[in-house]
Image (cartoon, rainbow, N blue to C red):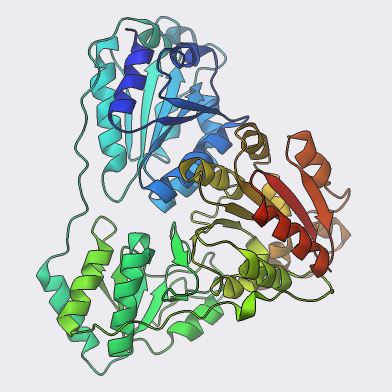
Length: 517
């Protein structure tokens, strides 16, 4: 058994059975080993950023790692942007990077690079294999590191000759370390704050935004009139009618300041004190009041849902929380112009129960978000690290993870162009993914940011730098060229008809929604 086969079998023993890959010469032994280890599902992606984004989406839905297989330093460099998002999402990922063979490394060949330096920018654990017989133990250690709470990227760098050389035994199955439970002193401290007369908020992040955490937080909010908040950049929300809905921290600092105004205490659950996405002239970075005190109920490594349940018990809070009402008779607008708000209303009315939304709407997000809260229960995967190009790959990974659930990618047109190659893999794997492109032919968010950063008015040359409508991008032709059935709509009635059809049928599709200006 050579090193490549040993690696695959060790991953399988540890429950890692999917590999998103874009291999090259140094990884040919791993590609060959797929035929000898058919239990490992290889998913070919046309660019490495799709591999890393797909692994992120997969991990967000299942809480376990997929692997990625990348080619040398440049291949890893292409993946770094979405690995950045995965790191912010605390997604467990095993990143396997091929290196030149050991005898070739001293000669500084064209593709030679400092791979560990690249990897350390996004990985909490980086290891370069030193001998072939380390393959099994190193692979097991990589899995253990990836699964270490709250989840992280673990990179294993493998010289090519170690993959074709005889290896030792397959690595052991590692024990998954559970999240620790916060100590009783944290629970009592939080309870004492909630019993005070001060205005208190609880900010939820990480796994506390899944159903058990939401239920406990809703009970606490109902019993104590505490302001329950959600980290807008958490990896995954459970949303929809029948579920308690915390208030999401707004994107811009002014409405965030307004929401948090008067808070004397903010209790943190698997998250950090909230900050604005960017710094602006004359604005504070922290959006809570200057005199607000922060308290940690559960760190990102701890079990936030369990902490909230313990806090609810300490407070005697057992009344069911208020639930989000259902969408108003699941109605859709009549004929009219197509706006982000209209799209949000239609998606909310037609989204099937258990769907997964991959959200990279950017400037359209604030108009769509309120409507989705009244849709049937679903999982929402928002932007985490802010590196553009996550939406389509995250949808791809989520669909691989949950093949029985409809996936809807709500995607800005400019952002889609960063990782459009994901459509090809979605078509190749025949995944049940519907992509909605919000086509405004512009980096619209930068119109807002221009004013906020006091950059002054834009003349024709500056305006050209945020205008992507010269020429218009034809997403219908692009999608069809990558194997995805696609159509273009520009009215609410036409969008409703196409989206309803996409929800009723299985398989990939794309709707280019041309927004009214």
